[in-house]
Length: 113
Length: 110
Image (cartoon, rainbow over all chains, first blue to last red; front, side):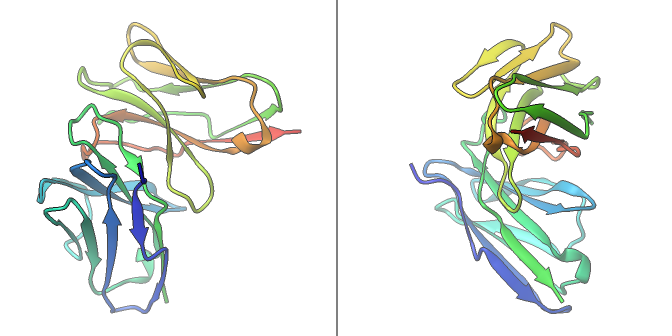
């Protein structure tokens, strides 16, 4: 079974631009969570989508948004990019039950100049 | 918020057994304990998950005492390729209180 895939793997943007990242979960998985990882803050939860609905949200500004499609694929959007948004963005998928393990993708490395 | 505390770093020689302990005093009844391994610039890789007592799979064992306020990941006979950061997570998948913490940087020495 194929794992979680994320595109693109690397991205360079400038301040003020917006960016869209994509995540394809493991086949059959209905939950997709997004995380931001930086050297200073570690891994922080952004939000979780389940059956096309945002089920949980972390403590990030409204510039960070996401959505999930009927095939469970998810996209994350960051508008008005700031230098501090430079990070590794990870998505993880699971079956959806709270006790189920989540599996992470390889991440998208975003650099904001 | 079930925060976790782990040692920042550990060193071990190749072939030895490594035990990494995680403290989680505020664990809730519905919380599971999950360990991940992460290499630089890669996504975390699932190692093992448990709720109580002992869980074993082909790569590791997880020991959880009765009070569940701590857990120990045991890696048998580590090799150089086990050099990575190990995260202990307590909570439920997709929950906004899932706290990764700083992880433990394990360095395996030849």
